[in-house]
Length: 93
Image (cartoon, rainbow, N blue to C red):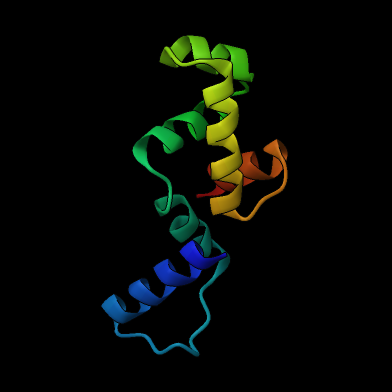
């Protein structure tokens, strides 16, 4: 996952931490979440609230296809394969 690796390196450089220092799970979740655009974060928040794609699309004034595509990008950025895994990250971050 290139985006997460890049964010990790930037965070470590900014904090003065060497590459060999491990990040804890919370730090990694926060970095992955930070990789999302504001629109993607908004979609993820609505997923975490239990809304389906149609409800998210209606709430945000988007098409269901756009929401589906955004979720694919979100899953990729978060390094997850399912809606449930994305929710776990969203609630834990």
